[in-house]
Length: 365
Image (cartoon, rainbow, N blue to C red):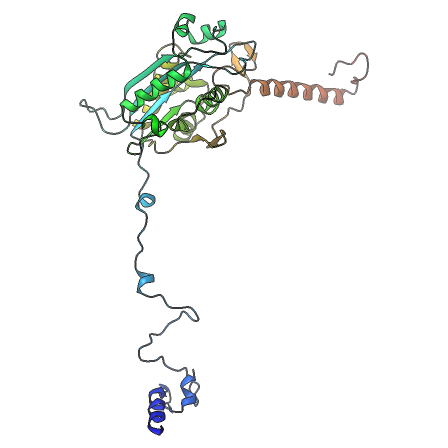
């Protein structure tokens, strides 16, 4: 018993490095400082010094590099293809199209942004799709639609309905390997990086969603995200895309080909802007807008001009709500004009202090 106690005491003995005092008593094995000189006790032979205090020092498992998800670590790949699209839909100058405007032309232009063709061109338009669509709510085109879009009545009378047109378009995309089949709800092919591209959010975010909701049709999965080229135009060229599509095309030194407000013509000229941006160094790698589960748009806000009035020659009038690209803002613009005029007249009345709203001869209101 005495030997074992002595052995235990010997094993617990420690010596101060400063004054060489040996602490041999069993009660002294827990001392942190020397009993004589108060110097800190040196660490045990097999215990490395640590500055972690009450925390546990890291071990080899903590220091070893962890496996990370490669899909999240990898940089975002640029888009290999862009599908430029520009709908045309029913409209009228004097009345709203009830219950909802309907698509009457569904065009697309396919752009290749990766690789090159045998001639060495890296960025180019390689295919196009175009079909007229027969409206069902308002089957007879208004004079405004026929004049604006140059679409004849006989062209839409023999055209497929919108549910047939969208299937034709999706089959065209599937032929290039961009979308999966109908059993996958026409989702985008995950092996190919591509995106839809429009000039404004009105085509998918407003018109397509609104019409498909009224007709109880399901929006294809590949149509729920897109690139608003107006947003990227302002970001790349550091200026606002003023004056409409034709003015923006000409501002880049390009020629606007064809008749404006024809869907395929507008899609080709929109594609010219996208190709000009790609050739000048812009990299398309993410969408700007999308449709959430509630049917509302999300993403970057598109640029809105400071002017709420469309000027056409010397005629200054509010834009119509059903006119293409207005996105249903015509009524609000009329109200803003009325409100602004009323405010000006009210200020004039207060300053002049001559007219009163209740007076018979009042002209301030």
